[in-house]
Image 1: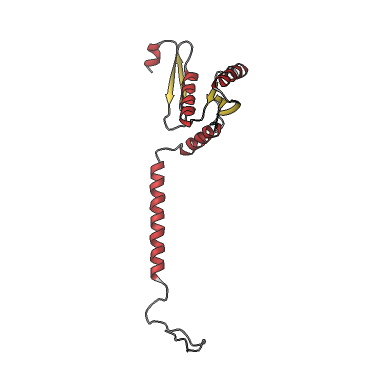
Image 2 (image 1 turned 135 degrees about the horizontal axis):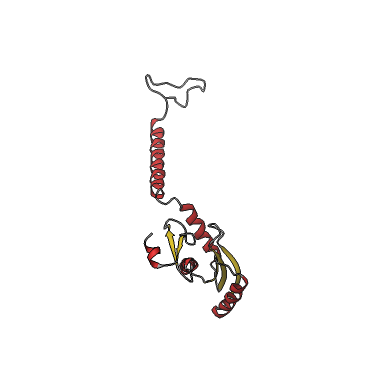
Length: 175
């Protein structure tokens, strides 16, 4: 060890057969790295079963964007669009009666077999249920039967896919 009275050019003592590195800091660094790798492994293991995780996040962000802070939003829901582009803002209203009138007007202006005009309120859960109901409604035929494939991993609005169209119930259930 050096003493305060020693000259500045005096070499520092080196311990024989010892590496001058600080082993404690290196050890702590190795522990931190191994813990972070375990955390990454657990996260990827948890997400491995849901390969549509990012699509679900994008769909929830889309619903969050269309959810009004107050009042009601009239939203066009289009099943044929990709996740993240399924909703389009049409109008907004302060009261439910005004929103229903706008919904009727907008539904007449936007006809289509893959689109439905919805009224969103301030609840995200309610709006997700609106989308799920609209998705089922759009897959329901006026005559005959649709065989619908359900992919529970996909986001709301993309879960159902039309498999085939059958004229009789016996043909639809025998698939």
